[in-house]
Length: 486
Ligand code: GLN
Image 1 (cartoon, helix red, strand yellow):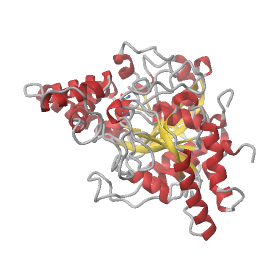
Image 2 (image 1 turned 45 degrees about the vertical axis):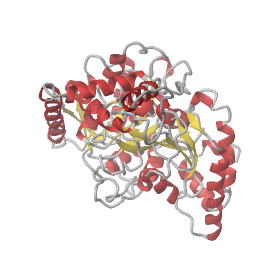
Image 3 (image 1 turned 45 degrees about the horizontal axis):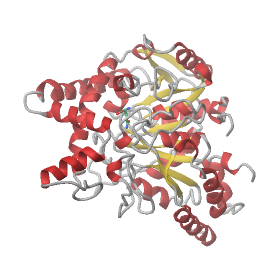
Image 4 (image 1 turned 180 degrees about the vertical axis):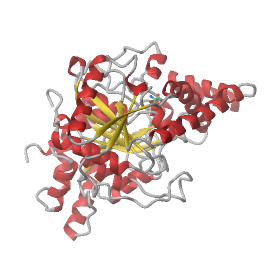
């Protein structure tokens, strides 16, 4: 039992079901590992709250009415509201905020038996690509602590990579599950928009926000995704009315004959040589497993950046208007009237990047600019989605890099937000189209930093993506690589 923290979700679940280990023992082991908050991955840890859940899980295991993942620990990105832990969304404006209810994703995972270890650091309101926009400080990458873990689910990826938790939730609006998973050498999936309920997920850009799991393998992601997805029609109007799938059931399919589309726009200028070489090698492995590589085109890839950075801030400017110092969150101490109270509370509570996006969003929505920016962006968004549908006539899944480079050094882009935006180029198109997509570790690039391959599927094809990743992980060992010192 010495290396409990190295076990997969699947292995832990089976040890718990057979009562070789108790939920309290498992929770205690992981809580010990979070002591001192390595990598600054957590924003809230409360051992007693975790142990209360673990004891309840042990009682269920004893009674024989346990869930499939009973007693397996998980930690949640701090944009999921939780009753047992504070929820800040990485923002000062929500410092010490306690939700009176759990997000649907959180309660579904608890119903499946999972025990919450705490809340994970992230970019403020999930806006960022490096986790450096957290009001509570940056997260370090377990593979090299002088580098960023990626973002915005940086705490989630770092905690899984450092074996502080076997699994974590994340959210992905424009890449925030895939990119940190890629940068930390773990596996993560964003399902089809609407698969997972957004109820209780603090909104950034509602037409793009989607929850998903981060873990070490596709096999574990399949277990987690089955537990967290499902219709929630009364509480999320964009929730899809499709039955919950057992994503583990289809993990045995050989890749023989699978057509993998390779978009030429994902392999052009700007893609670092080390990333390209690593991705190419992975594609050769998939080919050796029977897949066919088909050249395809996604001609509007570059436009995804301006389109996303118009639509997402526009939605954010509206979503974040609720943080006004009245209903919840930070309220300024010095004000003279209502308007000055709003203004000062927001000025004090929001960080620089959040303010930048609120202002950009208000601008592109304002009279006189709406047609030129917002409306135009919506039209191109539709064209990007159509390009994918054309591509899927020729292939079953699409593969390419997650990010143009490996994780960069902390502070590198601190004074240049545009540099972070540009690095989102490969993750934004699938987000704008609402397609399921994932990141799978495929080796090491420059400075021995992890590289992830991105797999994109057509709507509701998560099972296929997970199977491709699983088949790859059956013949490779990159997903088991441990950061030095872990
Ligand atoms: N990096 C992108 C942004 O800053 C994506 C963030 C996300 O997916 N939450 O908006």
